[in-house]
Length: 284
Ligand SMILES: [Zn+2]
Image (cartoon, rainbow, N blue to C red; front, side, top):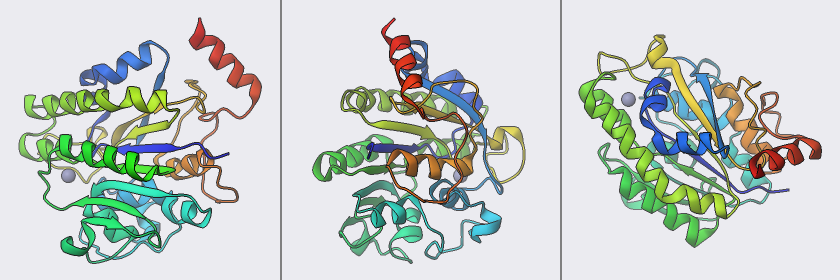
């Protein structure tokens, strides 16, 4: 069975700041609709290597995407390639590095910014290249893709949190307020996604440090959240998902068989009894 899935990658969102500043997502947790897990990102704690990890389940050391300057197509199977093989529809509103990893490299803004090509791995794309592209516009781009093309898998990737961290560091009102703003943006769309039955994962590539950067092994750089929303998740705390297991989880949600990607124990509901317990719990 295909469960339509939305993956939101909030660039540069540290776990601790998500916990303190994302009131809307935590309201969903308090009412039993969402669950958050603490994850550790793979290394190096940098964007392009970890976009590849999230979408392929492969660590940077193995994928070869070990820094931000490596500009080439991914040579791994990904959520996008596996979904396309299964005949599913894919879309992304995201930084242009995703277009380079899964569609065309190098990025050509005139050709690639608005992608509508059923033959591509990301069939419907709205890609940006200015790092200050406003999150509010990006969410509108994503919603437009969702309504227009009804994708089975939609990736949404805003960049403003990471930018705020590079400008002011993790311990700054600018960084925290940008996280609060992102939470508020999400509150405009998530209720509709829930009503329409989407499975939603919200996570980050990496965190942020006090030196206005990231890349190393500090816990503020590596600790990131994974929020999950939807009826297919177990919503059990007895689960320790890894960043390398997001890809396999999405493949399972999309009903893709034999994907050979790692998946965490207990993140998804595997049997009807657990599903019944979940619905009983949220009804009470
Ligand atoms: Zn960054």
